[in-house]
Length: 321
Image 1 (tube, helix red, strand yellow):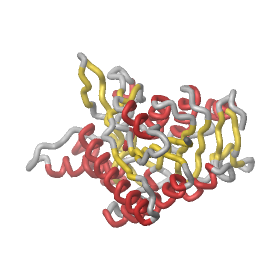
Image 2 (tube, helix red, strand yellow):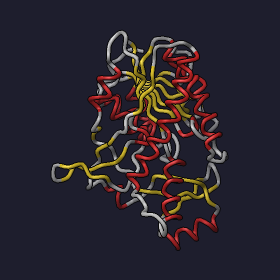
Image 3 (cartoon, helix red, strand yellow):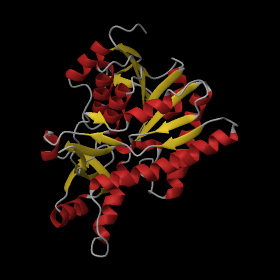
C-alpha cells in the first residue's frame, strides 16, 4: 500500500489578500480537494494536516471582542475550534469529490492533541503569527490596549499578532491515526489530523493540560509522520521548488537533494525563519526520525511531484533517489 502524510499550507484554504469569508475558503478548499483526490484516486492513501493561522486568529479576536458578554475561550480551545471548522470544510469538499468520482473513500477528521514541554523557551518568546493583518497604526493600538505582541510581515505588508510556538514532542492520538491509514486493502478512510499544528498540551501530574500556544503545523506533521512510521512526507506550499541562493543571481531550484545537503543549506542561513525555514526544519526532523523522503512543492504540482517530475525531493542519506 502506498501512503503519505501531506501538510497543506494556509494558501490552500485562504489566499493572501482575500477576505476570510466562508465562500472564499470553501472555494479554495474545493480546489485543494480536487488535487488531493487525484492523488488518492491514483492509489495512495493519505493523512492530511493543515494550517489554521487566519482562522484561529479570527476566533481569538472574536473572543476578545465579545469578552464583556460571553466567557472567552483560551487559545488551545480556539485551536480545537479551528480544527473542527477547517476539518468540516475539508471533509465536505473531499467527500463531495469522492462521491462525484464514485470512489469508496470517506474523509474523517480527528481532533488531535500535540504534546509540548512546559519548559520550552518559546513560551517566553512569542514568534508564531496568527490572525489578520493590520496597518502600523492599528497594530500599535492593539499592543497598547490588549498587550499583544505584533510583528511586521514584510512580504505581505502588514502586522500580525504573534503567540508562543513550542516544538512538538509527541502526538496523543497517533495510534488511531496509524490504525486508520494502514487499514488494509479495502481501507476507506482519508484521515485529517493535527489541524493547525494540533492542540498544544503539556503532560503534568498524569494529565494532559492545554496551554496558550500554536504549534507549527509542518513540525507537527513531521512528528505525526514519524509516530505512525510513515516513509513519505509532502509539504504543499505556494512555490513549486525550494531555491538555493534565493533572490541572488545564483538562485537555482533544488530538485533532488540529500538530507546532508539540505542541512548544509539550512545551517548556512539559506532558509529564513519567516518563510521556508520551518518547512526545511520539519523535513530534516522527519528524515532524522526515520522517514525516507520529503517532497516540497505547490498544491497544483502535487500529482506531478509524487510522480517525480516536479517539486523538491529530499532523501535520507542512506536512501537512493
